[in-house]
Image 1: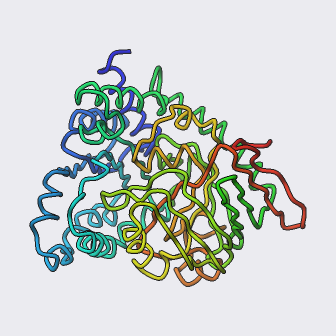
Image 2 (image 1 turned 45 degrees about the vertical axis):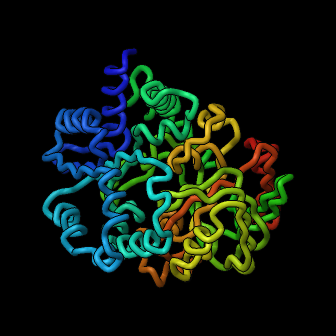
Length: 411
């Protein structure tokens, strides 16, 4: 297929399989200006499917850097209500809504800028957008995230290539791991069907604890939330519409209990946080809380992340991804969570997903906390899976089951 044909299929995939737009719905698209051709393809796909309206919010990462560097911190932290309201007016208005976020940015966009300034500005924005984020975190509406290459991101992934060649190679890699070749919508609907089979098997095990071990020193016990549910690939909105939040995706995930995580875990991939890197880091947990940590690079940045709020020291998600993942098989470090988290088992510091416990979408924060689901303004995925990772599950009846052996599903 030509680049134009693949880009067309990518737009069809994101809209008709990802957010799964329904007739009469409004589609909100968040995208960098460099993705304008994909945005047009997505808009056409949405209208083909009967969308009522397509609303686009463009961003410019270079302008974001200029603003972060030149604007006073007091101004950056004064996030105006209209920003969140520009989404809520559509989400809360007449008719149903869906949100498609197209991402793609320089992994080190804010390199060299004062870290405290970046962290404070980021925390202020997340707090100001909390109500909007709740609609996606709780899957109250359909939502999906896909990615597009940018020059700086592509050069980070493929540093030995010229910029144009790096961008084209990253495009092709994204198309490959996103199952775009051929009929992308059909590919994803079949893939979602297959993954539901494994998800149902894991849910039937009634696991209450996971034990991770790897030769790098990881020895971590993760107790699971009460009435936990495993999710993977597709979810359902309040209106009962099936959608796929992340494209690509290879994970099965659930909610840890915020007070029942103990042991030590070592990262297996660098993590991009607020436009800079944290590398080779270690976290030590006791009764759910990070009580010690270290990093060969970015330790101060890791400290700022952990101190964002009380919930940032606990984990809100644990996800299982085999080493045979197509993304992992590329043997590429993407420096982008959407891809790197789908190449490796991971945990997320911060907020848990309400949908990972039975009836959680309709629970208050207090009730979710009682179930063990963590609360925070952050949700930051950290890759912990290695090629020799073993995972043993403890079931409610006291029996154990081997989930992973040497980085692969054991059943």
